[in-house]
Figure 1: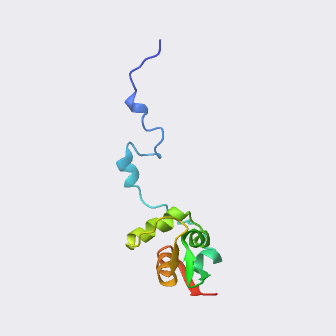
Figure 2: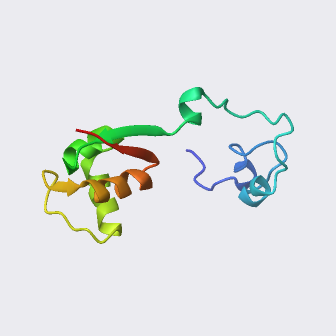
Length: 109
């Protein structure tokens, strides 16, 4: 029959070499190779969208590349309450939301 008592000496199987617990992992020195992900041209320049004087929450979410509920959450933090995703937003409010999502806005037709 299998032994049901855990062997606490084997609990470091998922930890990096030389670490006996998670505190040791947190105190590890930084990776000396210094490798990181390269910054692409798309990441370097901010995204810019063009919107009219009014836009629905749903369309703004599509332009920002996020679901409508995230735009509604951002609106709530701005103390703007909307009943649903078909609600129209004025340009200034939409620009504030886009700015909080890291997107620049231009006024369009």
